[in-house]
Image 1 (spheres, rainbow, N blue to C red):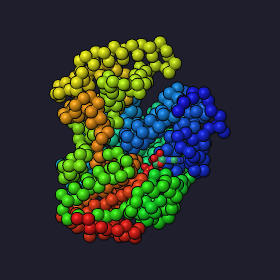
Image 2: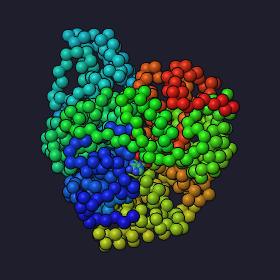
Image 3: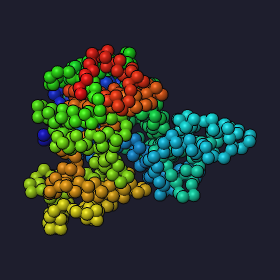
Image 4: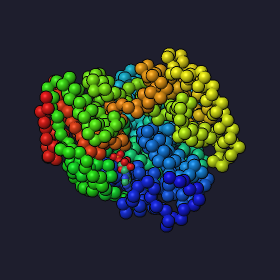
Amino acid sequence: MTLVSRRVRPEQWKPIDVDALEANALDVVRSTDNRSVIAGPGAGKTELLAQRASYLLQCGISQSPRRILAISFKRDAATNLAARVKKRCHPDLAYRFDSLTFDAFAKSLVDRFGQALPQRWRPRPDYKVVLDAYDRTFEEFLRFLGPPPTQIGKKADIMAIGSKEFQRRWLFGAQLPEGVPAITTPAEWAADQFWQSWIHGPGGSSLTFPMISRLAGLLVTSNPMVAQALRLTYSHLFMDEFQDTTQAQYDLARAIFLGSDTVVTAVGDNKQQIMRFALAMDDPFKLFETEFKAKRTPLLNNYRSSPDLVRIQDVLAKALDAKASTPVSKTKGTVAGDSCAVWDFSTPAIEADKLAEFVAKQMVEHKLLPRDFCILVRQKAADYYKKLEPAFAKQKLQLRNEVEQVGEVTMQELLVEEVSELVIVLLRLFTSVRAGRHWTACLDRMCQLNGLAFDDDSGRAKVVKSLNAFEVQFRKTYPTPVTSRADAIKVVQSLVDFVGKPNILAASPAYRQGDWFDKVCEAAALHLEASSKSASGWSDVLDEYEGVHAVPLMTVHKSKGLEYHTVIFVGLDDQAWWSFANDKIEATAGFFVAFTRAKQRVLFSYCAQRGDRTKIAALYQLLTKAGVKTVAVA
Ligand SMILES: Nc1ncnc2c1ncn2[C@@H]1O[C@H](COP(=O)(O)OP(=O)(O)OP(=O)(O)O)[C@@H](O)[C@H]1O
């Protein structure tokens, strides 16, 4: 594809890389007002944002120096969206597309302007980000908190506050005031104690991402210049997976953009709301449509799944929303036999063997690759991995737990981190015999990191020279893969030094504060060491690092936004879905997300030894209603 930097006239603009967009999608792409797009799985919501970015940039509707801000919920979704825009737009245009997660956006504001917060809300610049603050953390805080002043209440009042309610309503439910908050109830008092002890703790400031969102909101409302600067910077705002927006995130977006000329497009699917446990709002679309006067535009197609899968999805969708429209599949079914079934097994060992055998056979029959499959589980991925991995190995297939921790980062997170991507792209260049395509990728990346304009020929020539010189050196020092952790650390360090840490920090705001950069470098080195263990050459190491030849195993939550030819959900039982009764809607939405990742086939596997299926009978009833059969396999 040739990338054109010249301006395209709006009436001449055509969707790129897809044959066509449905009429409503095209309408949103060209829209000049705020829009909400609520559409089912595979409707092309993310694709629509990528097309809209191309349209706005190529037609000069988002005019330089203004930019487009795209906010996603997952790091890989943000990276994926940016990659689609980069692939389709000339670099002169694509650099004006900022795609990041909500957390990263809020954090970048706190990092840049946090010292302008009022003293009682001002974290220390070296604040620590706490990623593992769960319900228990808040429960314990309340338990160990002393009694409130007598005029406010008693310790028993504090103990009566539930952890979820404490977070959702009292800690993060409303914007922070500039001064001292009005404290008349025990819950308000406890919330203030929490904020103050975490911001001004004896060991420094500790912040969770919900806290960072609220602090970002406060700094925007207390410093109108910050909001003004952001409004001027961004001509357009996109919000993907909008159904999972928390109140704090919504309030931040509203504080910055409501009433401005920034045009906002929010896309999502209420039926895929699986982040209620992480404080997602009840119905963010409704509020957005009212406050931003956004027009709702539905999408009617499904570009991902076969007609048969879309028919079953429709039954599940209607259980979540009786008014959900029935989408039209735009994909052909390619598998013979049932595209969905529940497979019953007598033991987990037999189950593992049969599933691995099935994957191996399907790969041959349909000419599929390991990454066309995905093994999904509800939780405890490591336990399932342990049981399934030997069976896959027997079939000469590699299974990989994508949610495994590598140091302090999960594998899935690591692979989309800037440092890790740089390590891979550079190592591919420095260790391949024919490195043509890696060469262009490296050169573009290096020029971008050095802040060079696309037409800066002398700057590019210098980068070429330094790449060549470093490559010679690298090949001499590391003709074969690393054999120790010390070497893996040295390799990562030398690549970071070559690119220049300041360049990396400048391109990735998340690395500028705290120790995230060090943690990612450490994880990259650990993963490089592990990937080198059984590899015979650098190419194998890098394939192993990226999991090119591995069947991924992950949890439903981590599968959001992804798609596979075949999805095998292991463990459709009460034990895996132990919390089903607590929140049936969220659990059914999780089930829906898992189901809708598949393009052609979904298998559910059940083994009575692992648990009953009475508490989740409702899920089985839905499958039965959709005509899905249960088969006793072995
Ligand atoms: N107009 C189109 N023509 C052909 N393919 C398309 C079109 N729009 C999207 N697709 C493809 O359909 C698949 C689903 O698209 P996308 O991921 O954008 O859907 P989504 O609505 O964001 O899905 P989900 O909510 O399930 O994550 C992708 O493979 C995408 O490339």
